[in-house]
Length: 200
Image 1 (cartoon, rainbow, N blue to C red):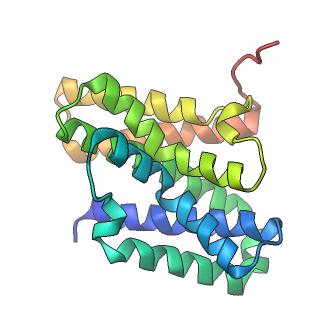
Image 2: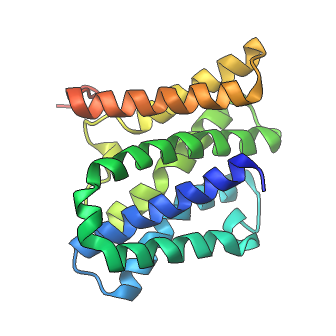
């Protein structure tokens, strides 16, 4: 298995934990928590695949993704108190996850023959729309609609990836630089309160 595939599974696992933790905060039962974990982990990729006409969608062709989600649910169920104390660590993994999913979505869209503009948009969809579906199902205002910088970091990272690829940088350097950029922007945005102007 290649590194990107393993990182994709790791991102799926982390997002499943995020979804399950959100469901636990809402006092959902185990079935409800599993559904929230599923949509958080693969919702963005599912929407992307449907939009670019790649069916069956990725996770339906590889049971390892369901295994990663199941493991995320189990870990959260049995170790929720520990995870609460590790929220800062989970936040960092979430930032890594959106960075990876941005690149994976962008690459898959380019491989489908669509333009770089569409690839940037689909990379962002891959990274954040699972969280949008999660928040809607949990009766929360989705994070990307609030002032906090989230989707903007993914979009900027996707643009950086396209630029570095155009400049001819090696693939692994490009991936590492893009993920690092998204992580740094996301972390700084939260710590320093960066956000886009609010419509009044």
